Amino acid sequence: MTNTIDARGLSCPQPVLMTMDEIKKGTANKIIVLVDNEAAKENVSRAALHKKWTIASIEEQELDFKITIHHGV
Amino acid sequence: MSKIGNILAGRWGIIGVGGAIGILAALLQKLGNPGNMGICVACFERDIAGAIGIHRADVVQYMRPEIIGFVLGSFIAAHLFKEFRPRVGSAPIVRFILGMFAASGTLIFLGCPWRVALRLAGGDGNAIFGVLGLIFGIWIGTLFLKAGFNLGRNKPTHQTAGWMLPLVMMGLLLLAFVFPQIAGEPKNGILFYSVKGPGSMHAPLIISLVVGLLIGFIAQRSRFCTMGAFRDFLLFRQMHLLSGLLALITAAFAVNILLGQFHPGFQNQPVAHTQSVWNFAGMCLAGLAFALAGGCPGRQLFLAGEGDGDAAVFVFGMIFGAGIAHNFGLASSPTGIGAYGIPALIIGLAVCLFIGFTMRKNIA
Image (tube, rainbow over all chains, first blue to last red; front, side, top):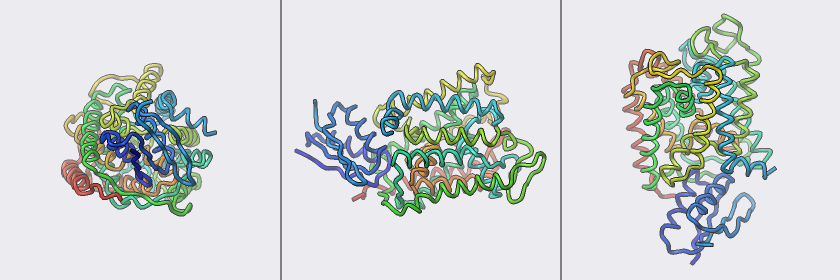
């Protein structure tokens, strides 16, 4: 299952907290996180790697970033 | 260009940035800044408040170029790396109030988290109570964050809005050039200058400005944050930002040893008092306010430089708060806490708890 988190416009550490909550829920093996700044992109990516998730892709869309992460390697 | 940015945001990048800040801060002290105060965001914003006459405590009035440099250095970096994103609208009034009480807390301790680190690196034992209070305050903040506390979303806005604080800083710099300090004079034109006390102690203007610009630049790239350092460790067990802060302390300690600036002890430390309970409580209030506002006072300046109008409001809250801290006699001095320090602490903590308990979820 794929879940999407919209963390645009939210400041540190909300995007990471929301991503961690979703990972902890355990219902999704793929999560898409939308953020709107570089720092949030780096923080979410770092947190995902820390939880041993894999970053499948990071797409830049106009002002936003779409980060796709999935469980395991 | 973006590759360089990525390096600074990486593990060794944040350690390098923290180390560079520690070295530069210790050198600024050698070049004239007050003891264990090579850089103190709260103290320097307080000095700026004094320079423009928001308060008239004549020992702490100086237009500190480091603060101006922090904002403008970040502004330059954000533009160079295409990260300038003008945004506003995440509870600005709440951020103003948090900034105000963050200033109260830091001025009761006598230092922001950056100075806590520098005081530790200079051997000031009183800072141990400060850092413990800071961690405790941030820990309370993480409990609110876990319970869903947030200040809501910001929205993209006009470029002009993002330029406001950088423009104000350019204006303040212009004032410092138009009305430079005259030796022995407490005032030139509209600017106040301390002739004694910490406000009279400073490195040459140009050096302070260049160091400020450099730190603003690398801190924007690396997202250096002294509050985030403890918050991320407490929340996620992540060492990333904390490694930057530890590098700052280590580097400043090393330079202090080399320059003979390391004086271990509790008594007669520069711009410090020995009332441990209030050192702890002051930083506890500051830590909580910074955690709720999402960044230490340095980080707020760097965010404002990259277009975050809400962080800019926090900065104005701190400058205003620093002004009233001296007008109301709630700031401490080396002899101890001010006459109204304790009521300010109680009110500040009550306001922060009120904000923390009542601003939950609802971020659709």
